[in-house]
Length: 96
Image: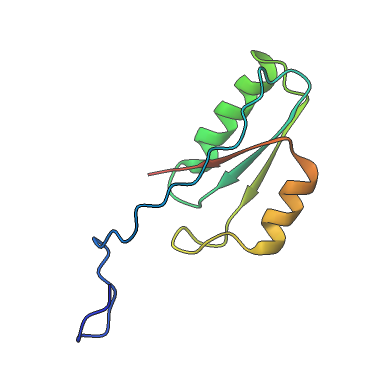
């Protein structure tokens, strides 16, 4: 919600629309997993640990990791399109 000071109120919650969740696979075996690093501190280490577990413990075929340009910006469309062509499952990772 804009105000007369020219900035957006980050606490504004407009609309009550809901977005349906994507269907979830029954397991990760043989799947290519995409992990999106948000560039925050330790995100790369967290995603490496999670990615290793997906392969070693859950049988994922492989994991690819891509990194956003900056945590405050959405991922570029070409990065999302590239991941969509390569992976069956995508996870956006948060560092802190």
